[in-house]
Length: 80
Image (cartoon, rainbow, N blue to C red; front, side, top):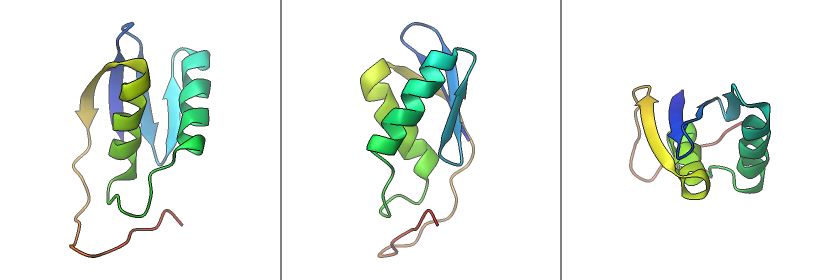
Protein backbone atom coordinates (compact mmCIF):
# COMPACT_ATOMS: atom_id res chain seq x y z
CA UNK A 1 0.00 0.00 0.00
CA UNK A 2 1.21 3.47 -0.90
CA UNK A 3 -0.48 6.69 0.20
CA UNK A 4 -0.06 10.02 -1.56
CA UNK A 5 -1.02 13.63 -0.83
CA UNK A 6 -1.83 15.49 -4.03
CA UNK A 7 -0.82 19.08 -4.74
CA UNK A 8 -4.41 20.06 -3.85
CA UNK A 9 -4.04 18.39 -0.44
CA UNK A 10 -6.24 15.36 -1.17
CA UNK A 11 -5.14 11.93 0.03
CA UNK A 12 -5.35 8.74 -2.01
CA UNK A 13 -3.90 5.28 -1.63
CA UNK A 14 -3.17 2.43 -3.96
CA UNK A 15 -3.32 -1.14 -2.72
CA UNK A 16 -3.01 -4.12 -5.02
CA UNK A 17 -3.21 -1.83 -8.04
CA UNK A 18 -6.55 -0.26 -7.04
CA UNK A 19 -6.84 3.36 -5.97
CA UNK A 20 -9.14 4.67 -3.24
CA UNK A 21 -9.65 8.23 -2.02
CA UNK A 22 -12.13 10.33 -0.06
CA UNK A 23 -12.81 12.18 -3.33
CA UNK A 24 -14.53 9.65 -5.63
CA UNK A 25 -13.57 11.66 -8.73
CA UNK A 26 -9.90 11.48 -7.79
CA UNK A 27 -10.13 7.73 -7.16
CA UNK A 28 -11.88 7.20 -10.48
CA UNK A 29 -9.30 9.29 -12.35
CA UNK A 30 -6.36 7.46 -10.74
CA UNK A 31 -7.88 4.04 -11.48
CA UNK A 32 -8.45 4.97 -15.12
CA UNK A 33 -4.90 6.34 -15.34
CA UNK A 34 -3.52 3.13 -13.80
CA UNK A 35 -5.41 1.06 -16.39
CA UNK A 36 -4.01 3.18 -19.22
CA UNK A 37 -0.44 3.05 -17.87
CA UNK A 38 -0.13 -0.03 -15.66
CA UNK A 39 2.97 -1.03 -13.74
CA UNK A 40 4.82 -3.52 -15.91
CA UNK A 41 6.70 -6.69 -15.16
CA UNK A 42 9.87 -4.69 -14.52
CA UNK A 43 8.43 -3.42 -11.24
CA UNK A 44 8.79 -5.55 -8.10
CA UNK A 45 6.57 -3.01 -6.24
CA UNK A 46 3.70 -2.13 -8.61
CA UNK A 47 1.84 0.06 -6.09
CA UNK A 48 4.87 2.31 -5.66
CA UNK A 49 5.32 2.54 -9.42
CA UNK A 50 1.65 3.51 -9.85
CA UNK A 51 1.97 6.14 -7.12
CA UNK A 52 5.05 7.67 -8.74
CA UNK A 53 3.30 7.80 -12.11
CA UNK A 54 0.16 9.33 -10.62
CA UNK A 55 2.20 12.08 -8.98
CA UNK A 56 3.53 13.15 -12.37
CA UNK A 57 -0.08 14.08 -13.23
CA UNK A 58 -1.63 15.27 -9.95
CA UNK A 59 1.52 16.56 -8.24
CA UNK A 60 2.20 16.06 -4.57
CA UNK A 61 4.20 13.51 -2.63
CA UNK A 62 4.25 9.99 -1.25
CA UNK A 63 3.43 10.18 2.45
CA UNK A 64 3.54 6.47 3.29
CA UNK A 65 4.72 3.29 1.61
CA UNK A 66 4.69 -0.21 3.00
CA UNK A 67 8.11 -1.86 2.88
CA UNK A 68 8.82 -3.12 -0.63
CA UNK A 69 8.80 -6.84 -1.32
CA UNK A 70 12.16 -8.48 -2.04
CA UNK A 71 13.40 -8.11 -5.59
CA UNK A 72 15.94 -10.06 -7.58
CA UNK A 73 18.10 -8.93 -10.53
CA UNK A 74 16.89 -10.16 -13.90
CA UNK A 75 13.47 -11.30 -12.68
CA UNK A 76 10.35 -10.21 -14.56
CA UNK A 77 7.46 -9.79 -12.13
CA UNK A 78 3.87 -10.55 -13.03
CA UNK A 79 0.69 -9.00 -11.68
CA UNK A 80 -1.24 -12.25 -12.30
